[in-house]
Length: 406
Image 1 (cartoon, rainbow, N blue to C red):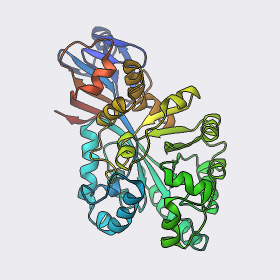
Image 2 (image 1 turned 90 degrees about the horizontal axis):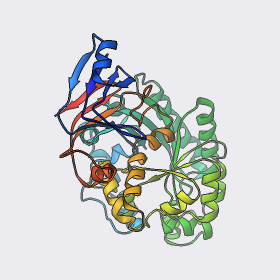
Image 3 (image 1 turned 180 degrees about the horizontal axis):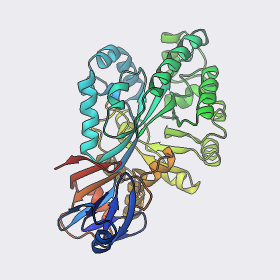
Image 4 (image 1 turned 45 degrees about the vertical axis):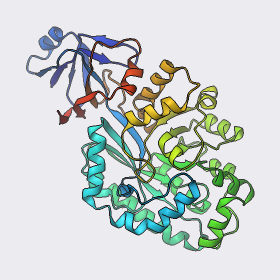
């Protein structure tokens, strides 16, 4: 048992001052320090300095660890040009990111306060580093392949990777399934993967409506993807419409990444099926894609959260940076209110979307917590200041264990 006594505690509904928190792997009680020391007389006590803030650890629900070698190799500004550059440099990027490269990405996330991340794994090369990561990991084994003739081989490879992730037995590691996108996965494969997810109770995620190219290809078998698919895959039509793709997920809440080109009908389906949208603003900007229409999501009560995507379409894996970019990209959103929504999008709402017992400083929640050193006493605009100012993160706790101290 431990007791930590910060100057301030950020709970889901209140900012508490001069309270302390008792915890082991989970948060046991929030009360004045004197009360906790009487109730838990043998607990180790950590007293923090003035203007210290204890808040939930951050949750990055969508990141590609395997592509962490990229810095200047890929082409930005246009989605199709970027995609061609990924294919052209794929072997160099994958081969150039060894365990040390992937560990560096994981360490960078820890340093920026990320206590849980969702790893989208295309090849399984990141399994060992994710299995040994200090953070909680939702390990999304990704399924990709639109050619029916390759379906059996692709599904066999996918199942082998999924089974390998199922052999990892440690607290905070959760195998899961990712369907790459509507244009890149054959319906037969999607159906079989979702059956596994439903049978085993696994989280599901997919990229959806990231670009204009995807919109035109799924709607009209036209646009920038037409040449791409004809040239590389000898394919002259999409394997699914967007409607058919979404229907696969009926009855199974799914995390859908990007969704920047979704139409009214698709948003209504996302709302009615209780799916979650993952907002990756920096990735969208670098790949020449639109900004997510968060107002449309709010109007339909669609939950949205914030993630970094991978270093193939970002320059760092830092959710504070991601929130700052989003804050300025959505120039018409009420500033303080939107900042609060962004903080929830990397804490409590992300935890709810992933079905994990974290994301909030509250009794019974996992003790995934970070300590920030503020410059002065916080105001009612704390959420905004957390995003604008890069406060030092002096401690990171995951499942009650101190994983970083500065």
